[in-house]
Image 1 (spheres, rainbow, N blue to C red):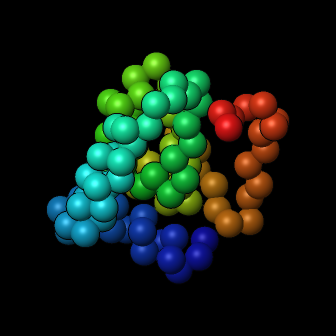
Image 2 (cartoon, rainbow, N blue to C red):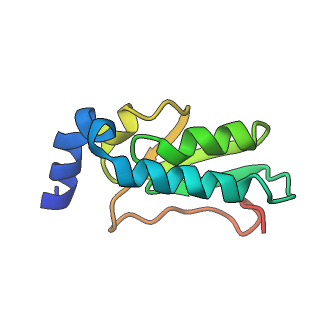
Length: 102
């Protein structure tokens, strides 16, 4: 396990308490998502971590399947979404060309 991954895993329980900037960015991104006039079936949240943006995205697109992907499994444990995948930089996420909305 990489040092970066170990660091994120060890900080995951208190990450949300100290991530003011990340939370602010998630709020701003979610405001931008609200004006998108699409109805996606699948959404992949790469680097979803503890779920700052995941929860907001799920609220905006309630009918979509939201797949949360992060390399820090402890962060994903703190993410409230149901569909979670832990993958590191050396893993390959395989999906068919029609698995994601364009």
